[in-house]
Image 1: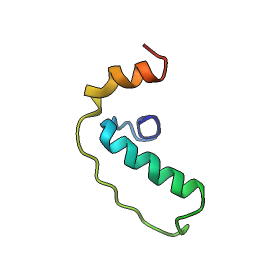
Image 2: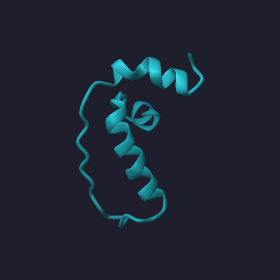
Image 3: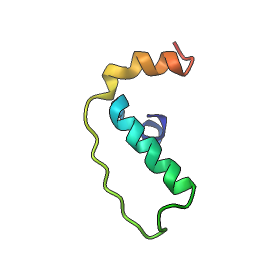
Length: 60
């Protein structure tokens, strides 16, 4: 959730944030070719999850 909000200004819903994190982990481990293009669909509204995320991150 933080990666997209910091770099793109997108607040992903928690369901989609799991997919984003998995994709970032694969990229960090070098499991994706450097010239690959990835399309990831986001669904839901992250603004509804802000209270939960803030609590988990110790920001609440």
